[in-house]
Length: 364
Image 1 (tube, rainbow, N blue to C red):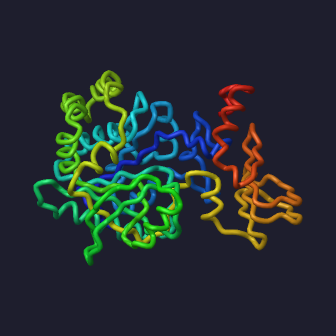
Image 2 (image 1 turned 90 degrees about the vertical axis):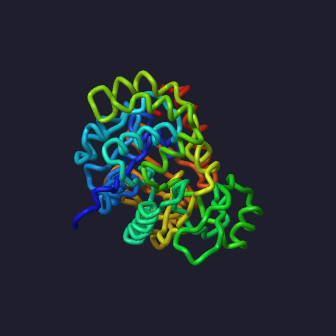
Image 3 (image 1 turned 180 degrees about the horizontal axis):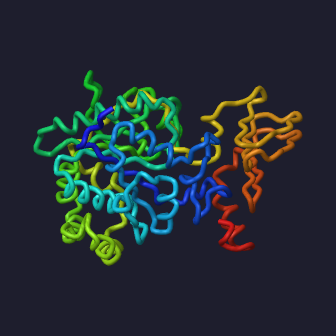
């Protein structure tokens, strides 16, 4: 299948994934692990999904400079010049601007998707259909303030851990976004679902390089000026030096706050695919197949006695015996074993900090 030469993808892969500790560590975060036990790491699955629509040499990976070797090992089809290393953590807006400038310089007609490296998407054909709809809408848009599109996930329950997108109901595939809503309390989330015109914010964006650069120039002009000063260096041997010298000067701000919440021309496609941001171990339990005792088993060989509702993850083939355990998370990495109630999954960061303090940073 011939792929569109104007299509590009940005994979954001700089996070630490601390809520998936002890498997995910600062020196080897979750996007580089086979979290699902499917034979591929999360970033490999993301690349495989996007490269069905985007030429492999048009995929850029934005990541921490400490993870360059992992990216090269797991994504050998990504060119060295398309691995953009962030010398400091500055949230999503600066890295997206940098990538958009690189794409625009290579191809002023470029249209791109920005996607996290560590999300779970079940129905890939539905995802690719929605992506094609978004790409074509961005290519065709001729308005003065060009279209910025996000993929929204149709909510299945009143989730309080996601931001929401309110949109104008219409027959169009791309709905006009009325407002972005912060993570709500339970009652507010129930109200959103009852209204019927809200989506979960998945953090997946599509726009033309020209449109997002014009938006940066309008809404984040200082950042635009800072990075555009190095335009001639981009896609050359001088790029790395420019980034190292200037990147830390950029404002620490997300693309949502910096651009999308200010723009009046944002659209959302309510997605038709199953999705999870895999934010914590409980999300993995929710999205994987259960056995007859409602346990989720990843990699382990389990002997189960009177145990239900558990997530058991180990190194490949390890024998795990559980007896009388209900609704627990059991995660065994090479150096650390964690056993905790599912109801306390948000305490992982606290546990992680305690281990670091007592036993050292090598374990986190």
